[in-house]
Length: 462
Picture 1: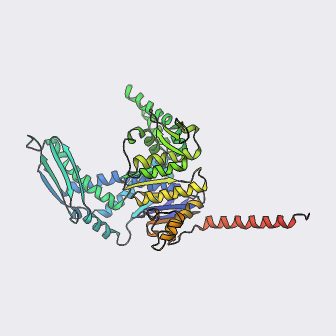
Picture 2: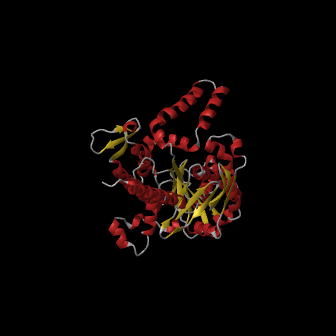
Picture 3: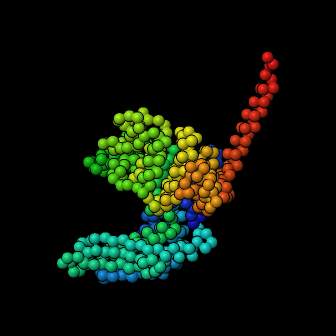
């Protein structure tokens, strides 16, 4: 799917391919890279909920009441085929309506902004083929009944079976309300995976991530105090206004990062299949990222017996602590990870390691979108692309790369933001060429060389 944007920040126009596993934004400052990255995050963040509700309305027409049978069948393609264009248009409209909240601005700020979504040539047929080929099942236990939604691989027919357990003989009246909801949820889940891979579990790490890790408890606590005051006393208009101001004061990315940080004590109970990448990331930090008893992120240096608070840890730890936690506890196939400037506070050698880790994240089924100014990171990604070649095994062994961290050039897309536009950069088998960065490096090399030889020529003889 493609997202076409007009008049967003300084950006007059751009079309972004959302189908790739790894997306790279580069360009000079103040060219709206972050605006676009956060808009794409918001599309996935809110798109799942929109599709759930929209598909439910479609399903309710295809599976009309009464909803009191024990088995239902739905032709998924018959239900979705005529609806997909309208669903895609609705996604774009929903995203445009949410922009003021996404960026915590006045509604008038985006009055001229236009957003549209479209499928590439042949993509609609590919979506149909994917939906038919997909095997999917979910099940619930409700009021003594086992309810299972299932779509076999290679079939376009989905079924919902309601099976009694124990002495329960009839579907309770309350259950009739959730029959279309469960069918809609299952069909919607399939469609989300087909149209918006990454919408099942989107996460974002903004450039403010270091401050968020340090001050999340205080910032989130203020909002909780306001809500508590409303719950404990009568709801007054000024209290409601205060809540609205509090929730709109920060952009969506910061609000979500604050929420995620405060949910870490619950999230740490889960283990991600990408946990080994967290350990690899921590090797460059020289210790482990841990949670203390109160739920605060801490850093345990390898050479010390007790953990340090982030406020006395290095800037690299502050920048990467959230990523380490994400890789250990949150990352999952079908997710999306958006990172603004992953190179923040990192020495060039560590920037290269982070590039390799992010490549492995993408290869594990998590879509990755980064915005970067780092030549080291771009060049490392280029090396990973070049080393993907079938005849590069000797080079991989020579320089310590594994095949599992190399990138197929067809799975990565890069965009150069320049003044008022963004255009795709050719990504070939030798990597990514960013002219704006290369030109500055070449210019600096020429100046340094000229200055060196000029001063050498003026050096007095001894």
